[in-house]
Length: 408
Ligand SMILES: Cc1cc2nc3c(=O)[nH]c(=O)nc-3n(C[C@H](O)[C@H](O)[C@H](O)COP(=O)(O)OP(=O)(O)OC[C@H]3O[C@@H](n4cnc5c(N)ncnc54)[C@H](O)[C@@H]3O)c2cc1C
Image (cartoon, rainbow, N blue to C red; front, side, top):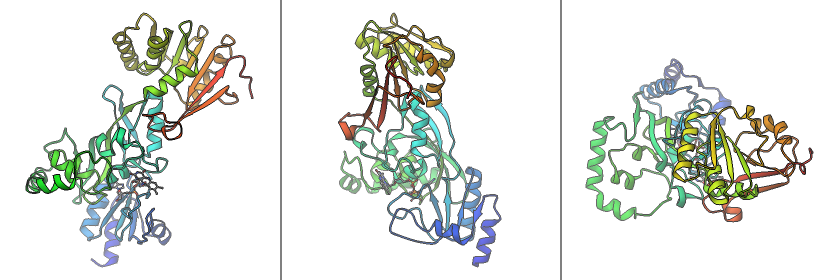
């Protein structure tokens, strides 16, 4: 095809595509040393549009370069063909399942955005890539990214349940342990390949090698060739475009919970109100470790049922009560300690009630403070800064002593 025909083929799809000079220059670089001007840049809104542009590119003989935030260091997100930018759209987070500890993310969801969503639920995404404020989940999967806590959480490939992908011929497929009938021919080829090269793979990928550069994960594939996620994770956009993923979550480390109880100086004489109690872990620790009584509030009845069961399993049901209700309407006047594992809007919404608590009561908030309230103390928890092992990202805790914490 002539360049004019290639343009026309790409422009004829329902996927937004830019051919202008400025856009092409902007997408000619990523965080690597290289610079390659693409022919065009596409901005699919969903898997259907991604399929349309990828199929058109294949038809026109144009290479496809999937792209997230462009923070990759080796030039994987640039190229001469059509750059398919998944970071502008595809940013939905859906199907959060606390019981299964999974959530579905669009390829363009940024790691910090995901962790902000998960934080009030008491979960996080384990792999902690240093570019968390930019890196997309699509880019992290394609690069099999991980961070300083790889020894604790492994790499992104360890946290994938299902991928939705677009192949070169425009087919949209789901792959993962639940989709073993997808692509039987490719699966057969993979099984043959790892069988023929098993010795060499074992020799070159010694067990226990947790973090290595991306690339085809022959060791993973050899361990479980039936799971095509093992082929996709680390393939740097060369095999398929990832449009969304179901990922596994890790619970908030107990260290945070313990520090919140410590900061609130919880004792057996306290009545702790935990707003946004999730699975009840703050109150359960307050009851088990300090003998405190408590009330946990959460909007989600499923979390409340989980919290009740956990309290029963831990033998503290007689000390704690969990209620499914709107925390902004809860009467907290009996509390001597209030813990807030919530967003800032919630903290602000209940601040008039907090102000009316008995003088000397403690309010402890995680990550979000309260507008116009001057904290009595602020604690930063970060395994790199002060050796709190097992904390996958920095956390900030705020303490206010009611009566002492005059409005700033
Ligand atoms: C200062 C700095 C620090 C870094 N620290 C770390 C670190 O701690 N750990 C680490 O692992 N990496 C690190 N990186 C590298 C990089 O930030 C990560 O690999 C990041 O996860 C890439 O995400 P991204 O969205 O920017 O991907 P991009 O750079 O856009 O793409 C990376 C690769 O993934 C492919 N890709 C992107 N999206 C898709 C998709 N939807 N479908 C298929 N393929 C896709 C691209 O084609 C490309 O090959 C660092 C980079 C910088 C600049």
